[in-house]
Length: 443
Image (tube, rainbow, N blue to C red; front, side):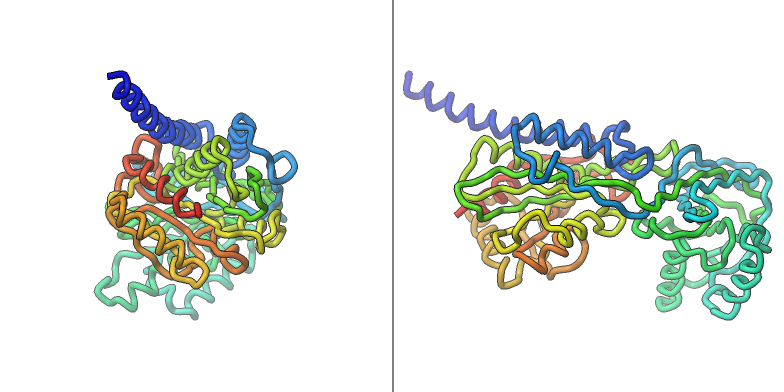
Protein backbone atom coordinates (compact mmCIF):
# COMPACT_ATOMS: atom_id res chain seq x y z
CA UNK A 1 0.00 0.00 0.00
CA UNK A 2 2.81 2.36 0.91
CA UNK A 3 4.50 1.62 -2.44
CA UNK A 4 1.35 2.56 -4.38
CA UNK A 5 0.96 5.72 -2.32
CA UNK A 6 4.49 6.79 -3.21
CA UNK A 7 3.85 6.11 -6.92
CA UNK A 8 0.56 8.05 -6.77
CA UNK A 9 2.28 11.05 -5.15
CA UNK A 10 5.02 10.99 -7.79
CA UNK A 11 2.49 10.96 -10.66
CA UNK A 12 0.52 13.72 -8.94
CA UNK A 13 3.66 15.84 -8.62
CA UNK A 14 4.34 15.51 -12.37
CA UNK A 15 0.78 16.58 -13.12
CA UNK A 16 1.14 19.54 -10.77
CA UNK A 17 4.37 20.68 -12.45
CA UNK A 18 2.69 20.50 -15.85
CA UNK A 19 -0.30 22.48 -14.60
CA UNK A 20 1.97 25.05 -13.02
CA UNK A 21 3.69 25.62 -16.38
CA UNK A 22 0.37 26.35 -18.07
CA UNK A 23 -0.70 28.51 -15.15
CA UNK A 24 2.48 30.57 -15.36
CA UNK A 25 1.94 31.16 -19.08
CA UNK A 26 -1.61 32.32 -18.37
CA UNK A 27 -0.31 34.63 -15.63
CA UNK A 28 2.25 36.26 -17.94
CA UNK A 29 -0.27 36.45 -20.78
CA UNK A 30 -2.81 38.10 -18.51
CA UNK A 31 -0.30 40.82 -17.63
CA UNK A 32 0.88 41.39 -21.20
CA UNK A 33 -2.68 41.74 -22.50
CA UNK A 34 -3.97 44.00 -19.73
CA UNK A 35 -5.11 47.54 -20.53
CA UNK A 36 -2.19 49.00 -18.62
CA UNK A 37 0.14 47.70 -21.35
CA UNK A 38 -1.66 49.97 -23.87
CA UNK A 39 -1.52 47.25 -26.51
CA UNK A 40 2.30 46.99 -26.23
CA UNK A 41 2.66 49.50 -29.07
CA UNK A 42 4.01 53.02 -29.24
CA UNK A 43 1.02 54.98 -27.96
CA UNK A 44 1.78 55.92 -24.35
CA UNK A 45 5.02 53.87 -24.59
CA UNK A 46 3.19 50.59 -24.16
CA UNK A 47 6.15 48.61 -25.50
CA UNK A 48 8.40 49.98 -22.75
CA UNK A 49 5.84 49.11 -20.07
CA UNK A 50 5.84 45.54 -21.34
CA UNK A 51 9.65 45.43 -21.58
CA UNK A 52 9.97 46.51 -17.96
CA UNK A 53 7.59 43.75 -16.87
CA UNK A 54 9.51 41.09 -18.82
CA UNK A 55 12.86 42.26 -17.47
CA UNK A 56 11.51 42.02 -13.92
CA UNK A 57 10.31 38.48 -14.60
CA UNK A 58 13.80 37.46 -15.72
CA UNK A 59 15.25 39.05 -12.59
CA UNK A 60 12.80 37.23 -10.32
CA UNK A 61 13.70 33.91 -11.95
CA UNK A 62 17.39 34.59 -11.48
CA UNK A 63 18.02 34.40 -15.23
CA UNK A 64 21.08 36.46 -16.16
CA UNK A 65 21.07 39.35 -18.64
CA UNK A 66 22.58 38.75 -22.07
CA UNK A 67 23.37 42.46 -22.31
CA UNK A 68 23.71 45.18 -19.70
CA UNK A 69 20.45 45.53 -17.75
CA UNK A 70 18.75 43.05 -20.18
CA UNK A 71 18.02 45.81 -22.74
CA UNK A 72 19.40 46.09 -26.26
CA UNK A 73 18.36 49.67 -26.97
CA UNK A 74 17.68 51.04 -30.44
CA UNK A 75 15.42 53.54 -32.21
CA UNK A 76 13.17 53.78 -35.25
CA UNK A 77 10.61 56.23 -36.60
CA UNK A 78 6.94 55.58 -35.84
CA UNK A 79 3.53 57.19 -35.38
CA UNK A 80 1.16 56.66 -32.47
CA UNK A 81 -2.51 57.64 -32.28
CA UNK A 82 -3.05 59.07 -28.81
CA UNK A 83 -6.18 60.71 -27.42
CA UNK A 84 -9.79 60.70 -28.55
CA UNK A 85 -10.96 59.53 -31.96
CA UNK A 86 -14.37 60.34 -33.40
CA UNK A 87 -16.12 59.79 -36.70
CA UNK A 88 -19.64 60.92 -37.49
CA UNK A 89 -21.17 60.70 -40.94
CA UNK A 90 -24.27 62.77 -41.54
CA UNK A 91 -24.51 63.20 -37.75
CA UNK A 92 -24.40 59.48 -36.91
CA UNK A 93 -21.45 58.42 -34.73
CA UNK A 94 -19.71 55.23 -35.82
CA UNK A 95 -17.93 52.67 -33.67
CA UNK A 96 -14.12 52.66 -33.94
CA UNK A 97 -12.58 49.49 -35.36
CA UNK A 98 -15.91 47.70 -36.00
CA UNK A 99 -17.32 50.42 -38.26
CA UNK A 100 -14.18 52.28 -39.27
CA UNK A 101 -10.40 52.09 -38.99
CA UNK A 102 -8.20 55.14 -38.82
CA UNK A 103 -4.57 55.65 -39.77
CA UNK A 104 -2.94 58.95 -38.85
CA UNK A 105 0.43 60.40 -39.81
CA UNK A 106 2.51 63.53 -39.23
CA UNK A 107 6.01 64.59 -40.22
CA UNK A 108 9.12 65.82 -38.44
CA UNK A 109 9.08 69.31 -39.94
CA UNK A 110 5.59 70.77 -39.86
CA UNK A 111 3.25 68.32 -38.13
CA UNK A 112 5.09 66.17 -35.55
CA UNK A 113 1.90 66.24 -33.49
CA UNK A 114 -0.84 66.32 -36.12
CA UNK A 115 -4.48 66.81 -35.15
CA UNK A 116 -7.73 66.93 -37.06
CA UNK A 117 -10.85 68.22 -35.37
CA UNK A 118 -13.50 69.06 -37.94
CA UNK A 119 -17.25 69.53 -37.50
CA UNK A 120 -19.71 69.62 -40.39
CA UNK A 121 -16.91 69.08 -42.90
CA UNK A 122 -18.07 68.51 -46.46
CA UNK A 123 -15.95 66.38 -48.77
CA UNK A 124 -14.36 68.75 -51.27
CA UNK A 125 -14.05 65.98 -53.84
CA UNK A 126 -15.85 62.65 -54.32
CA UNK A 127 -14.32 59.94 -56.48
CA UNK A 128 -14.91 56.44 -57.68
CA UNK A 129 -11.90 54.31 -56.68
CA UNK A 130 -11.54 53.16 -60.29
CA UNK A 131 -10.86 56.79 -61.26
CA UNK A 132 -7.73 56.70 -59.13
CA UNK A 133 -6.38 53.77 -61.11
CA UNK A 134 -5.97 56.30 -63.91
CA UNK A 135 -2.55 57.74 -63.11
CA UNK A 136 -3.26 60.91 -65.10
CA UNK A 137 -6.32 61.72 -62.96
CA UNK A 138 -4.49 60.86 -59.75
CA UNK A 139 -1.50 63.01 -60.65
CA UNK A 140 -3.71 65.95 -61.63
CA UNK A 141 -5.38 65.99 -58.21
CA UNK A 142 -2.02 65.60 -56.50
CA UNK A 143 -0.53 68.53 -58.44
CA UNK A 144 -3.45 70.77 -57.53
CA UNK A 145 -3.09 69.92 -53.85
CA UNK A 146 0.69 70.27 -53.85
CA UNK A 147 0.33 73.90 -54.89
CA UNK A 148 -0.43 74.76 -51.25
CA UNK A 149 0.40 71.99 -48.79
CA UNK A 150 -0.99 73.96 -45.85
CA UNK A 151 -4.29 74.72 -47.61
CA UNK A 152 -4.82 72.00 -50.22
CA UNK A 153 -7.56 72.58 -52.78
CA UNK A 154 -9.15 69.25 -51.89
CA UNK A 155 -8.67 69.01 -48.14
CA UNK A 156 -11.11 66.14 -47.60
CA UNK A 157 -11.54 63.55 -50.36
CA UNK A 158 -14.19 60.83 -50.37
CA UNK A 159 -13.47 57.65 -52.32
CA UNK A 160 -16.14 55.05 -53.04
CA UNK A 161 -14.51 51.63 -53.33
CA UNK A 162 -17.73 49.65 -53.63
CA UNK A 163 -19.18 50.45 -57.05
CA UNK A 164 -17.17 48.13 -59.23
CA UNK A 165 -17.45 44.43 -60.00
CA UNK A 166 -15.36 42.28 -57.67
CA UNK A 167 -15.85 39.43 -60.15
CA UNK A 168 -13.23 41.12 -62.26
CA UNK A 169 -10.34 39.60 -60.32
CA UNK A 170 -7.63 41.69 -61.92
CA UNK A 171 -9.51 44.93 -61.22
CA UNK A 172 -10.32 43.81 -57.69
CA UNK A 173 -6.65 43.11 -57.03
CA UNK A 174 -5.64 46.55 -58.32
CA UNK A 175 -8.25 48.30 -56.15
CA UNK A 176 -7.20 46.46 -53.00
CA UNK A 177 -3.54 47.20 -53.68
CA UNK A 178 -4.36 50.89 -54.19
CA UNK A 179 -6.30 51.06 -50.92
CA UNK A 180 -3.40 49.47 -49.04
CA UNK A 181 -1.06 52.08 -50.50
CA UNK A 182 -3.45 54.92 -49.69
CA UNK A 183 -3.68 53.77 -46.07
CA UNK A 184 -0.15 55.07 -45.52
CA UNK A 185 0.94 57.06 -48.58
CA UNK A 186 -0.69 60.43 -49.18
CA UNK A 187 -0.72 60.14 -52.97
CA UNK A 188 -3.38 62.85 -53.32
CA UNK A 189 -1.74 65.30 -50.89
CA UNK A 190 -5.00 65.90 -49.01
CA UNK A 191 -5.47 66.13 -45.25
CA UNK A 192 -8.23 63.51 -44.91
CA UNK A 193 -9.15 60.64 -47.20
CA UNK A 194 -12.37 58.80 -46.34
CA UNK A 195 -12.79 55.48 -48.17
CA UNK A 196 -16.03 53.53 -48.34
CA UNK A 197 -15.05 49.87 -48.53
CA UNK A 198 -17.06 46.63 -48.76
CA UNK A 199 -14.92 45.03 -46.06
CA UNK A 200 -12.51 46.60 -43.59
CA UNK A 201 -8.89 45.60 -44.05
CA UNK A 202 -6.76 43.98 -41.37
CA UNK A 203 -5.38 46.70 -39.12
CA UNK A 204 -1.61 47.15 -39.28
CA UNK A 205 1.20 49.50 -38.27
CA UNK A 206 3.59 48.11 -40.85
CA UNK A 207 4.18 51.45 -42.59
CA UNK A 208 3.95 53.61 -39.49
CA UNK A 209 7.27 55.33 -40.22
CA UNK A 210 5.79 57.15 -43.25
CA UNK A 211 6.01 60.95 -43.04
CA UNK A 212 3.02 63.00 -44.19
CA UNK A 213 0.37 65.09 -42.39
CA UNK A 214 -2.39 62.72 -43.44
CA UNK A 215 -5.43 60.95 -42.01
CA UNK A 216 -6.79 57.90 -43.80
CA UNK A 217 -10.14 56.51 -42.66
CA UNK A 218 -11.73 53.43 -44.16
CA UNK A 219 -15.37 52.90 -43.33
CA UNK A 220 -17.55 49.83 -43.76
CA UNK A 221 -20.07 50.32 -46.57
CA UNK A 222 -22.80 48.79 -44.40
CA UNK A 223 -22.43 51.68 -41.94
CA UNK A 224 -22.37 54.49 -44.48
CA UNK A 225 -25.26 56.35 -46.11
CA UNK A 226 -25.60 56.44 -49.88
CA UNK A 227 -24.50 60.05 -49.93
CA UNK A 228 -21.98 61.64 -47.58
CA UNK A 229 -23.16 65.17 -46.85
CA UNK A 230 -20.97 66.00 -43.90
CA UNK A 231 -18.48 64.37 -41.57
CA UNK A 232 -17.24 65.10 -38.08
CA UNK A 233 -13.78 63.73 -37.44
CA UNK A 234 -11.39 63.97 -34.52
CA UNK A 235 -7.99 62.35 -34.15
CA UNK A 236 -4.47 63.11 -32.96
CA UNK A 237 -1.22 61.46 -33.88
CA UNK A 238 2.33 61.83 -32.59
CA UNK A 239 5.32 61.32 -34.86
CA UNK A 240 8.50 60.02 -33.22
CA UNK A 241 11.55 60.53 -35.43
CA UNK A 242 13.76 58.36 -33.21
CA UNK A 243 11.45 56.45 -30.94
CA UNK A 244 13.46 54.75 -28.15
CA UNK A 245 12.65 51.08 -27.72
CA UNK A 246 14.42 47.87 -26.72
CA UNK A 247 14.87 44.15 -27.18
CA UNK A 248 14.86 42.21 -23.89
CA UNK A 249 17.58 39.55 -23.77
CA UNK A 250 18.67 36.97 -21.19
CA UNK A 251 20.62 33.72 -20.97
CA UNK A 252 21.26 30.62 -18.87
CA UNK A 253 24.82 29.35 -19.16
CA UNK A 254 25.19 25.66 -19.97
CA UNK A 255 28.18 23.39 -19.58
CA UNK A 256 29.13 24.35 -23.16
CA UNK A 257 28.95 27.61 -25.14
CA UNK A 258 26.81 25.99 -27.85
CA UNK A 259 23.51 27.84 -27.82
CA UNK A 260 19.82 27.14 -28.25
CA UNK A 261 18.07 30.48 -28.85
CA UNK A 262 14.37 31.07 -28.19
CA UNK A 263 12.84 34.23 -29.62
CA UNK A 264 9.47 35.99 -29.78
CA UNK A 265 8.21 39.50 -30.38
CA UNK A 266 6.49 41.10 -27.43
CA UNK A 267 5.19 44.20 -29.21
CA UNK A 268 1.74 44.55 -30.74
CA UNK A 269 -0.41 47.20 -32.47
CA UNK A 270 -0.94 49.44 -29.46
CA UNK A 271 -4.07 51.57 -29.55
CA UNK A 272 -6.29 53.28 -32.08
CA UNK A 273 -7.19 56.33 -30.03
CA UNK A 274 -8.38 56.08 -26.45
CA UNK A 275 -11.18 53.56 -27.02
CA UNK A 276 -9.56 50.72 -28.94
CA UNK A 277 -6.85 48.57 -27.33
CA UNK A 278 -5.24 45.78 -29.35
CA UNK A 279 -4.47 43.28 -26.58
CA UNK A 280 -2.45 40.90 -28.77
CA UNK A 281 -2.83 37.62 -26.89
CA UNK A 282 -2.35 35.29 -29.85
CA UNK A 283 -0.06 37.77 -31.63
CA UNK A 284 2.18 37.59 -29.74
CA UNK A 285 1.61 37.62 -26.01
CA UNK A 286 1.31 33.84 -26.29
CA UNK A 287 4.73 33.34 -27.89
CA UNK A 288 6.35 35.75 -25.44
CA UNK A 289 4.77 33.93 -22.49
CA UNK A 290 6.01 30.61 -23.86
CA UNK A 291 9.59 31.94 -24.09
CA UNK A 292 9.34 33.18 -20.50
CA UNK A 293 8.12 29.72 -19.48
CA UNK A 294 11.06 28.13 -21.29
CA UNK A 295 13.40 30.42 -19.35
CA UNK A 296 11.70 29.37 -16.14
CA UNK A 297 12.01 25.68 -17.07
CA UNK A 298 15.68 25.81 -18.04
CA UNK A 299 16.56 27.83 -14.97
CA UNK A 300 15.25 24.90 -12.96
CA UNK A 301 16.76 22.33 -15.34
CA UNK A 302 20.09 23.66 -16.70
CA UNK A 303 21.96 21.39 -19.08
CA UNK A 304 24.59 21.08 -21.72
CA UNK A 305 23.55 23.97 -23.93
CA UNK A 306 23.56 27.67 -23.14
CA UNK A 307 19.97 28.87 -23.42
CA UNK A 308 19.41 32.35 -24.86
CA UNK A 309 16.11 34.21 -24.74
CA UNK A 310 15.51 37.21 -27.00
CA UNK A 311 12.25 39.18 -26.96
CA UNK A 312 11.90 41.75 -29.73
CA UNK A 313 10.01 44.98 -30.13
CA UNK A 314 9.17 46.50 -33.51
CA UNK A 315 7.99 43.31 -35.22
CA UNK A 316 4.62 44.73 -36.17
CA UNK A 317 6.35 47.80 -37.63
CA UNK A 318 8.42 45.60 -39.93
CA UNK A 319 10.75 43.24 -38.01
CA UNK A 320 12.66 46.22 -36.62
CA UNK A 321 13.92 44.60 -33.41
CA UNK A 322 15.19 41.37 -34.93
CA UNK A 323 16.80 43.26 -37.81
CA UNK A 324 18.70 45.38 -35.30
CA UNK A 325 19.67 42.30 -33.28
CA UNK A 326 21.23 40.70 -36.34
CA UNK A 327 23.05 43.87 -37.43
CA UNK A 328 24.33 44.37 -33.86
CA UNK A 329 24.69 40.77 -32.66
CA UNK A 330 24.88 39.91 -28.98
CA UNK A 331 25.72 36.27 -29.73
CA UNK A 332 28.14 34.35 -31.93
CA UNK A 333 25.97 32.93 -34.71
CA UNK A 334 28.53 30.17 -35.33
CA UNK A 335 27.75 28.78 -31.87
CA UNK A 336 23.98 28.61 -32.38
CA UNK A 337 22.75 25.05 -32.74
CA UNK A 338 19.17 26.16 -33.40
CA UNK A 339 17.03 29.27 -33.09
CA UNK A 340 13.34 28.68 -32.38
CA UNK A 341 11.04 31.65 -32.97
CA UNK A 342 7.55 31.38 -31.46
CA UNK A 343 4.87 33.67 -32.83
CA UNK A 344 1.09 33.12 -32.42
CA UNK A 345 0.85 30.24 -29.96
CA UNK A 346 -2.77 30.16 -28.80
CA UNK A 347 -5.05 27.36 -29.92
CA UNK A 348 -3.54 24.50 -31.87
CA UNK A 349 -6.56 22.29 -32.56
CA UNK A 350 -5.08 21.61 -36.01
CA UNK A 351 -1.47 21.24 -34.85
CA UNK A 352 1.34 23.63 -35.73
CA UNK A 353 3.40 24.88 -38.64
CA UNK A 354 7.18 24.96 -38.91
CA UNK A 355 8.43 27.70 -41.22
CA UNK A 356 11.86 26.95 -42.74
CA UNK A 357 11.61 23.35 -41.59
CA UNK A 358 12.98 21.84 -44.79
CA UNK A 359 16.37 23.51 -45.15
CA UNK A 360 19.50 21.39 -44.93
CA UNK A 361 20.25 22.79 -41.47
CA UNK A 362 16.75 22.57 -40.00
CA UNK A 363 15.21 19.44 -41.54
CA UNK A 364 16.69 17.13 -38.87
CA UNK A 365 14.76 19.08 -36.21
CA UNK A 366 11.54 19.00 -38.18
CA UNK A 367 11.92 15.27 -38.74
CA UNK A 368 12.56 14.77 -35.03
CA UNK A 369 9.39 16.69 -34.17
CA UNK A 370 7.41 14.42 -36.49
CA UNK A 371 8.92 11.26 -34.96
CA UNK A 372 8.13 12.47 -31.45
CA UNK A 373 4.59 13.33 -32.43
CA UNK A 374 4.09 9.95 -34.10
CA UNK A 375 5.16 8.37 -30.83
CA UNK A 376 3.21 10.59 -28.42
CA UNK A 377 0.26 11.75 -30.56
CA UNK A 378 0.74 15.13 -28.91
CA UNK A 379 -0.85 17.30 -31.62
CA UNK A 380 -3.10 16.55 -34.58
CA UNK A 381 -0.54 17.51 -37.24
CA UNK A 382 2.89 19.04 -37.82
CA UNK A 383 3.36 20.76 -41.16
CA UNK A 384 6.13 22.75 -42.79
CA UNK A 385 6.44 25.56 -45.33
CA UNK A 386 9.38 27.30 -47.04
CA UNK A 387 11.27 30.12 -45.41
CA UNK A 388 9.61 33.53 -45.67
CA UNK A 389 10.08 36.93 -44.03
CA UNK A 390 6.93 36.69 -41.91
CA UNK A 391 8.45 36.78 -38.42
CA UNK A 392 11.62 37.40 -36.43
CA UNK A 393 13.45 34.23 -37.43
CA UNK A 394 13.99 35.65 -40.94
CA UNK A 395 17.17 37.69 -40.53
CA UNK A 396 18.74 35.08 -38.24
CA UNK A 397 18.10 32.31 -40.79
CA UNK A 398 20.77 33.89 -42.99
CA UNK A 399 23.37 33.27 -40.29
CA UNK A 400 22.33 30.18 -38.30
CA UNK A 401 19.74 27.38 -38.28
CA UNK A 402 16.41 29.04 -37.50
CA UNK A 403 12.78 27.97 -37.56
CA UNK A 404 9.50 29.72 -36.82
CA UNK A 405 6.67 27.83 -35.11
CA UNK A 406 3.04 28.90 -34.99
CA UNK A 407 -0.11 27.03 -34.07
CA UNK A 408 -2.94 26.18 -36.44
CA UNK A 409 -6.61 26.16 -35.52
CA UNK A 410 -8.58 27.56 -32.65
CA UNK A 411 -8.93 28.75 -29.87
CA UNK A 412 -7.97 32.44 -30.14
CA UNK A 413 -9.79 35.75 -30.34
CA UNK A 414 -8.94 36.89 -33.85
CA UNK A 415 -6.06 38.41 -35.78
CA UNK A 416 -5.10 42.07 -35.22
CA UNK A 417 -8.39 42.66 -33.43
CA UNK A 418 -9.25 43.98 -29.94
CA UNK A 419 -10.94 40.62 -29.26
CA UNK A 420 -7.53 38.91 -29.27
CA UNK A 421 -7.43 38.93 -25.47
CA UNK A 422 -6.25 36.62 -22.73
CA UNK A 423 -9.63 35.03 -22.12
CA UNK A 424 -9.94 34.05 -25.79
CA UNK A 425 -6.52 32.39 -25.93
CA UNK A 426 -6.80 28.62 -25.67
CA UNK A 427 -3.92 26.86 -23.93
CA UNK A 428 -5.42 23.37 -24.04
CA UNK A 429 -2.54 22.12 -26.20
CA UNK A 430 0.19 24.17 -24.57
CA UNK A 431 1.80 21.46 -22.43
CA UNK A 432 2.06 19.10 -25.41
CA UNK A 433 3.59 21.86 -27.55
CA UNK A 434 6.05 22.70 -24.78
CA UNK A 435 7.07 19.04 -24.45
CA UNK A 436 7.66 18.71 -28.19
CA UNK A 437 9.81 21.84 -28.38
CA UNK A 438 11.98 21.01 -25.36
CA UNK A 439 12.44 17.42 -26.53
CA UNK A 440 13.33 18.59 -30.05
CA UNK A 441 16.32 20.65 -28.86
CA UNK A 442 17.66 17.94 -26.53
CA UNK A 443 20.21 15.40 -27.75
